[in-house]
Length: 278
Ligand SMILES: C[S@@+](CC[C@H](N)C(=O)[O-])C[C@H]1O[C@@H](n2cnc3c(N)ncnc32)[C@H](O)[C@@H]1O
Image (tube, rainbow, N blue to C red; front, side, top):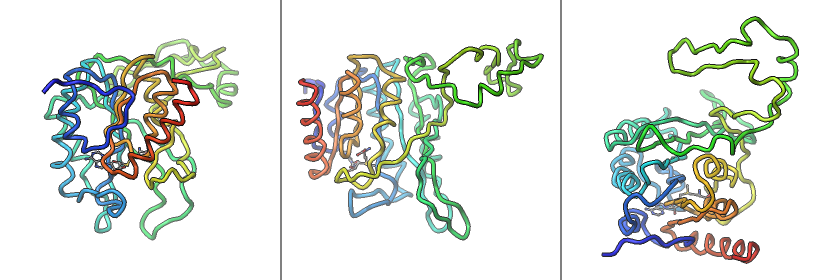
């Protein structure tokens, strides 16, 4: 079978089956939000928490094959509560995925700015999700300047007065190699962000119950790709990643198994293509 990419298309099918048709080392970035374990089973066939790792590993193996050596994989997921405690399937998955050769380069935290108010007797509301960053190599493409953000008001106050150590590069005591020189921030309007990203969840109905905000894939696409690169979302749902990709002048491939969501994603993409005249 000749392996090829179907560029700027949403594919209706099972991602494991469809990924096998992709050539090796062909994708620049995979950014995706797989179904949560057992959540919303009625809507899109959740996977039982105890079977999650076993279910996911063949897929991450294919991700490894199709991703370029300098590419990145972003997995947006969060373990849920099972029998009154956090399940460990995400942690188990990280350990198992590393055995496939993946490097667990970073973990970004998506802070959901508008999480519903509320509390439980034993915990508070959940307002963050993991965005796990895996790479095939320690050196990979990262365009940090693309996600610089306004420095914020705290800096004005902090930088009014200089302290003795502000001009010296202070290295982290954990020996992580991270260092900072406070004076570098002087006069800056835009700075690099941290690994906590703050976006509100989506409130408008996109005919899907687990949509992430477009700003989420947008941020990772800007960070890890350049114009013309190929971005894959193998669990594309309502098509959010595909829309963000197209708006940033990159190429997308989306895979969605559920016919209803596939049709909805395709409709949204076609509308955008018309708007962008492509
Ligand atoms: C968490 S949702 C993704 C939502 C998406 N990020 C959005 O903004 O709309 C996961 C999606 O994966 C789809 N899915 C589940 N198993 C799949 C599989 N094996 N292959 C392709 N899609 C699958 C589900 O139907 C669901 O739409």
